[in-house]
Length: 286
Image 1 (cartoon, rainbow, N blue to C red):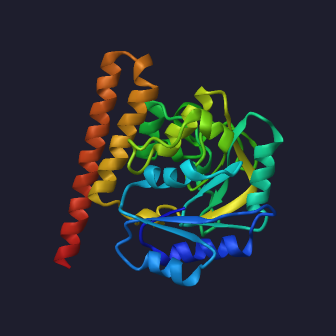
Image 2 (tube, rainbow, N blue to C red):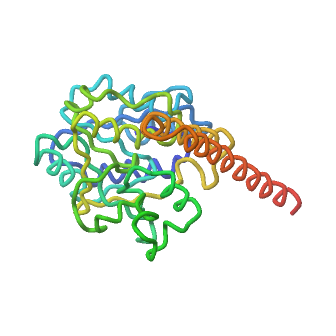
Image 3 (cartoon, one colour):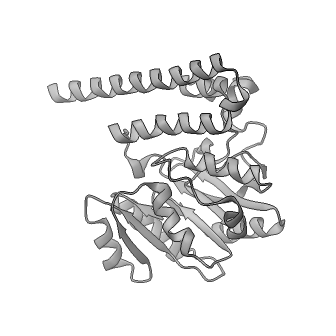
């Protein structure tokens, strides 16, 4: 678990693990990645059973890799501090992971606090068209055709278990045998898109990624990184988009399309930063 501020969310997450532990031995590690507040002190004071690692703000991938690199467990759970598990969540996910030899990763049904599903808990790898549709909102409509809604893995029902391209980094249960073959999270992603990258590399090495809706968890979506991304986070998000596309899709596409995709990512970043600046300017005038 990687924390960066938001102690109340982390406290709720740890309490959920305490209340709903799996039936197997569990060791919980919190890597505090440069929290600007008392988050690590809260963990040390209130959760003596948690192993706490204090680090600089080294990023999501690097912080998780510290633990993955050192573990001797058969399976590891990457859990966001803005998530809370329910009774049986981890055991059900573990049973799914162990049900077939080539299942390398399991994600669960993530619910937002209002009960709505977080559609990012099951995803297909984005194409330029589906990404454009998703970010404009067209692809999020229930009436959107498959080519536009593809990012949300609409081929699979919300309550239907099955293989998907990717699950969400808020809850990723991984088989360590697969991790040793695939490799750790790519630390070239400071924040965002590293979960999609990892899932793609799992599939490349023949390890399946499975969505299991019989297990559920709460995900306070976006809370651990703030309601509105800061400048460094926005840049990291858009750089991650470019890195993922360059690695997995650009080699198969013609150069003009690649140039258009990179231009689109840059334009989206510019628009997002302009909107953010506008919000800050209006807030300062109030």
